[in-house]
Image (tube, chains in turn green, purple):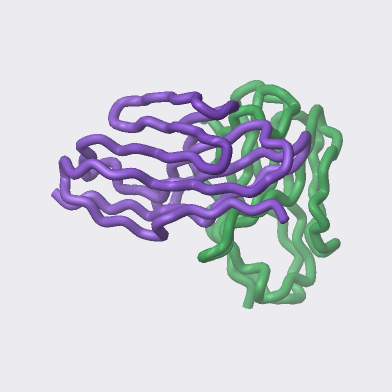
Length: 114
Length: 109
């Protein structure tokens, strides 16, 4: 595997379910990011991790819980989501722990909340 | 309020017909402006970073320019494989990154 991978690629869940999204980067980068991409809306930065520590949380509801066990892996734990949370969730990584550094994106997880 | 606006929302070009995409921004403390390309079903792919007014960067048929209030992505003699959504993002301050909604480009053979 090369670059940034995300699993699953598609996920359908009910509002009472608990699920997790996984991201893995094979680039040796030090920072990882979660984004939400909804139709007709700009990409929204959700979380930033630098060297496994969260450095930014852009007022994301607590039903989204990130976890970064090491610099190569990033998870987004989901529970009691709402239909408006349906979106494409993108993971990205960058070499340096700077939000302005070049970011490399994964293919995303298409999430549908019923 | 920090804002990034891209226009047009969609653009259809004949193969070989050059044009420009616009990204205008109102942010305080611009640190960098980024262009990405996104194909359907894929994550954004980095194209360029511009840091100061007057800066230009080129890659194949694409050329990005930056002024104090906007950036242009010029596409010269586009090919069908250039069809994608082009995203602009602006870094304001240390930890703020704002994306536009993108321009969906279709190049017709």
